[in-house]
Structure formats: structure tokens, C-alpha cells
Image (cartoon, rainbow, N blue to C red; front, side, top):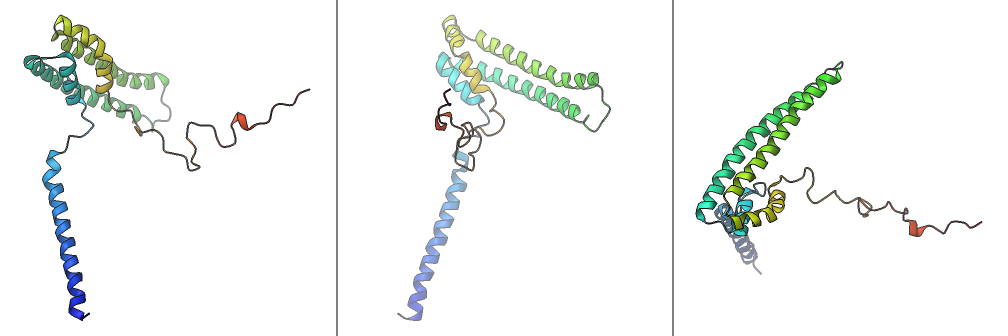
Length: 189
């Protein structure tokens, strides 16, 4: 095989790989707007679930969406205040001679915002329930716990659970060699 024929095939392969890379990057760029939103916004899924389960008409759905938007704005404000209160609480760490009463007062400030958030959410779902007909209210009462689970923020940490241990055992299982079935029976007297 001649020198030019050998490198011609390498050149063709190189051009094909470059074209494939360009096509792949173009597809990612063009399709990125068609991907679903981030999983951190459960609100639209909750609205769709409630509309479907309760059989809301278009007017009820629009009112539900407005209630949700108002609720989310108020929640953001309360969470911001809660975050500031917790920052102020932990800003007390450098003080070595802080009294328990001052510490309790600073901790109570964050608790107040947690209470406000719970009450706000309760009142929000009362307003949502008012949108329902009598038949829908019965369905609402049956699905509200599932709605609350859907709307709750994800638990902190790893949502899939703790990482596996290096020895291959489950983290919540007994340590190796600690299984009671592996022990001999107790001595009899």
C-alpha cells in the first residue's frame, strides 16, 4: 500500500469523527430547551396531579396556579428570613461567654419562621380546598397527604441513601462476623 493511500483512510476517518462530534454537539444544543425542568420544582407536578385527581375545570386550574404562585412568593420570603435568623444564630459561635438565654432567644427566632411556614402552607391548602365543589372536597381530603409529600422539599443529604461501605456490606446491616446465627450455642451447665 502506498504512503498516500494509507494516510487517505486515516484522513477520511478523522473527517467522519469530526462530523459526528459536530452533529452530537449540535443535537445537544438544539434539544436542550426541550428537556424537562429541574426536579427541584415540584410545584407544576403537584398542580397537574391535583387538577387530574380532583377534576378541576380550566377556571379552577387558573385559580390554583395563581394561589400556588402567591404561596411560593410568601414561602421564599419566609425562607429568606429563616436563613438570616439561622445565620445570626451561628454568628454567635465566636462568643465564648454567651448565656443560655441569649442562645435560646436566637434559636427561637428561626423557630418562629418555621411555624410561620407551616401556618402559611396550612392556610394555602385551605384556600385550595375552597376552590373545590363538595364532591371534589371529598377527593381533596383523600389525596392531601400525598400532595403534601409531593410538595415537600427533598430530604437533606443523599436521596438514594448512604453510600455503600468499602467492605461491600449494607451500611444498615450488622458488621461482618457479628451475625448471631454464626455464633455457637451457649454452653449448657
